[in-house]
Amino acid sequence: MRRPTLRTPAPRTANPRTANRRGADLRLGERLLAAVAAFAVAAVPTALLLVLIESHWPPLHRLDSGAAGHLHATVREHPAVLSALRTLSNGVWDPLTMRLLVAAAVVWLLWRRAWRLAVWAAATVAASGLIGWAVKAAVARARPALPDPVAHAPGFSFPSGHAMTAATCCAVLLLVFSPVLRPPWRWAARGLAGLSVLGVGFTRVALGVHWASDVLGGWLLGLALVAATAWAFEGWRRDTGRPVPPPLAEGLEPELAPDGPERPEE
View (tube, one colour):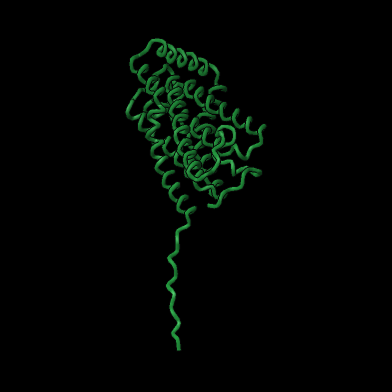
């Protein structure tokens, strides 16, 4: 009787799509790290601003002194305005409030299974806090010393942590939620974000805890960081064959839109 032959099962081959996706994910991590490093190049305007500050460039010095003195004197004469500015600066636009908004967005992204966009948002905001702290420690600029101060803040002055956090968080939120907003609401969100970023800067100078150049430096650093990490995220989308839409118009992940393109298999 003929003995049946045993066939050795063919080795299981890796799914090329899965392998490509894993490779793209690894490159996304590498790109995020490279983006934070390249951020130093994108922050050249901030470095130039710092050179002008350290050299006591007269026009910038006059701007800092004039804005601080005039706004501080005006606020001190209007208690109701002072109370409103304190509420906005220490509550509505406080860095903790802004970061909690981004944290809520990250939770929503995880619920929508947009894992990589959630990582991008969290990493960008975390990097913003670390970079802001490091630059403050390196520059060690003293805060304004005004007569009869109406507010106090700990630590060094440049860059403004409030301004940097507002610029970073508002840009991140716009790039996350743009796909799910209809055009009229998208424009409203941009207006609210711009108002928040400008308002944060105004309150910090008016309360006498930052120079105007501190606020400008915070804005430049925050926007440069978001631009660098968004570039890294767009590179990952190209690696995985996903479309790369204009980020300011459609956000970083247009698949989040209710009527957007179908999300590719994860």
